[in-house]
Image (cartoon, rainbow, N blue to C red; front, side, top):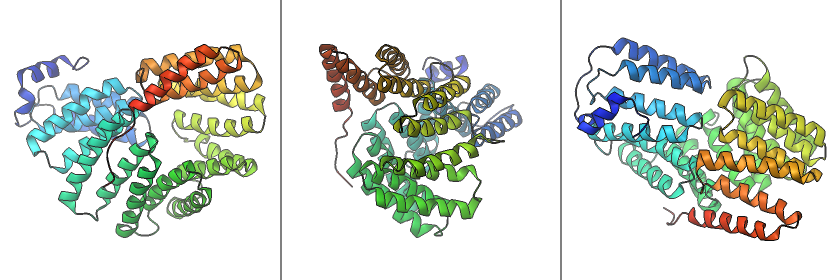
Length: 405
C-alpha cells in the first residue's frame, strides 16, 4: 500500500481498519471537503475533486479507523484518481474502501456492491478483463439479491458487465447484457428518462461495432430525442449520443452528416461554461478524424494538435489520453507518407502507454499493431513480425473465459 498517508499505513499494519468505531474531531471539515469534492466531480474538475478528497482524508486522520465514512473518502478519492487516469494511485484506495465496507457492513451489502462495481471499472481500464468481470458479476449478484431483478441498480450492473465484454472484444456477450440492461431500464423508468437514453447509447455502440449501422442509428436518434426533451437542444448532455451517431455516419462514409454533428458537438463543449478540456479534445479528435478520412490533412493536423495541447494542459504530458493524440497524429503522418515523423510519434505513444497502463494492456497491443503496419511499409518486416507477435500475445492473455448467464 505504498503511496498511502503514513497514518493509514500504520492503521493497516496494526489491523485497525477492521475495528469499527465512532468518529472524533474533524467531522465538519470532512463534510465540507467531501461536499466540495463531489461538486467538483459533477463539474468534471477531477483534479480539484482529488485535492478535496485528499484534504478530507487528512482532516479525518483522527477518526476511528473503523468509521464507515472513511470508506466513502477512500472510494471517492479512488474514483477521482481513476477519472484522471491515475490508475495505480487509485488501486489501493479502492481496496481499502472494500475492506472497510465488507468488515463493517457485511459482504452482501449494497455499498459493497458499489465498491465492487467501481473497482471493476478500474480493472477494465487497466485491461484486466477477467478480474473486472468477476468483480462486476459479484456486484450484480449482490444487487439482485438485495433489490430483486427489476431495479435500476441491477440494470446498471448489467451495463457494466456489457462494457467489460465490449472492451475485451466479446461483442456477442456484450450485446446480450446491453439488451438486458435496456429492457430493464425501459421497464422501471419512464420512456423519456435519460437513463433509458444511456442504455440505448451503450447498445448502439455494440451494434455499430458489429456493423449493424441501421439499428445503431435508430437507437441513437431516439436517445438524442430523449435528451433534447429532458435537457434542451443546447445541453452538453446530448453530446455523447450526437458523437456516437456521427461515428455511425462516418463508418458508412457519410462524411457530410458526420462532420455536421461533430461540429455541433464541439461547439457545445467549447462554448462557455464549456466541458472539461479532455472532452473538448475528444470532440476535436472526432472532427479531425472525419477531415483525415476526406484527405483534408492540414485541417485535421491542426485539430489533433489542439486536442493534444488541451490534454497535456488538463492531464499532464504522460497521461494515456495524450497517447491517443500522438497516435492520431502518427496515423495522419503515416497516410501522408512521412514515415519518420509517424514512427517518432508512435514510439512516444507506446512509451506513455507502457508506463501508464503496463506492458500488457490492450491499448499497448493496438499501438504495436499500428507500429507494425508502418514497419511493413518501410521494408522492416522482421521488426513488424516481432511487434505483431507481442500484440497477439497480449490479446490472447486478455480473452475472458466463462459462459453467458
